[in-house]
Image (cartoon, rainbow, N blue to C red; front, side, top):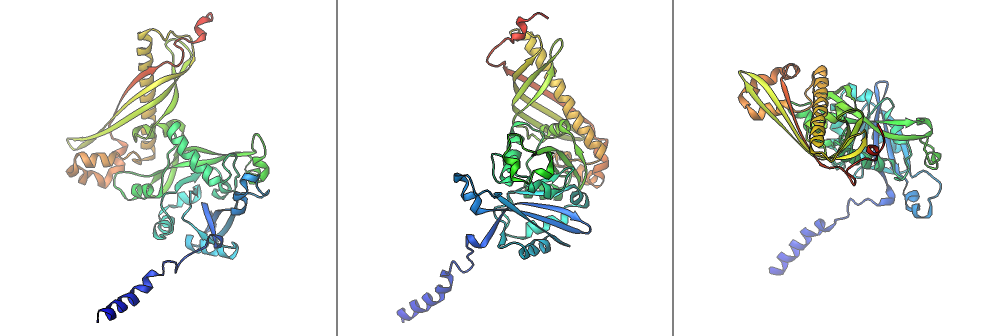
Length: 398
């Protein structure tokens, strides 16, 4: 009886041991690393950037003369429909788990993101860790067709550049799918995305010759921040306004900026640490926001006559940096008020500070935001003046 029981259990477990029933071989898949979405009339135009495995594997030997990636384009009334239609032109089924970048055109972004994002959240083949950007002044598919130097796969270049510029420059922000959806579904905040464009002759950027030149015909370049009202693109922040946004959101890791010297000329400082705090309160039913930015900086370049050995000079420079930073913060907030959208999450701050007051304020928060009193406080400490205290300019006659 005992042996019979073991036999029955073994038979029942056998189907569970077939772990390779849904296996997919690498030579049967097309690895998608970049995807773009454009409008074509009333339809979506989808472009998928697919890795050429043979060309990439030959990279150590100089490659086979082909482009490291290829793109497949198709149209459809819906994203999923267009994606499946690509099977009519691709020799392999598209595989999405390696997706690095999603590029959305301005036209699509202005129509709204909700319909297209549903596809990416519903399909479990997407890993949700890809970055999303908006193509500015150019079709999204042109971004994917631009071949890049150093990084052979353009989508890898886009991902690396976005992460690097966010950490070292500040007017860009790397947004993934979950973060975008959180902004779309949360009360008291509207989403933003970084813009991307092409610098140079876009028509020559898709040729292999583009990466065989010291100076390519065309380069991909991140440019400004796209501002959304709910899921629709309504405008753009410039570089200064974008940097202010990241300061307020405590997203500045490092950046550089110029400040006036004590007399004439300018001086460049490098922010090495930054911490921002946004506090909210409701007084007599009226919301108020306080922004405090504390940072440490080094002097990176001197383009003026100044004596950096004097403590009073450093103190004056710190005051100048604080004034410049407050101007950046004010410019960003004022621009957002002109758009009439709270992209900073001030509504969320008020919600946490006074949940009862928020119940009344949230119904017309965008209107409340336009008239919202915001106070700015900035504190900078200059830690180092560089490898030398005095600039050689001090040795020259004024």
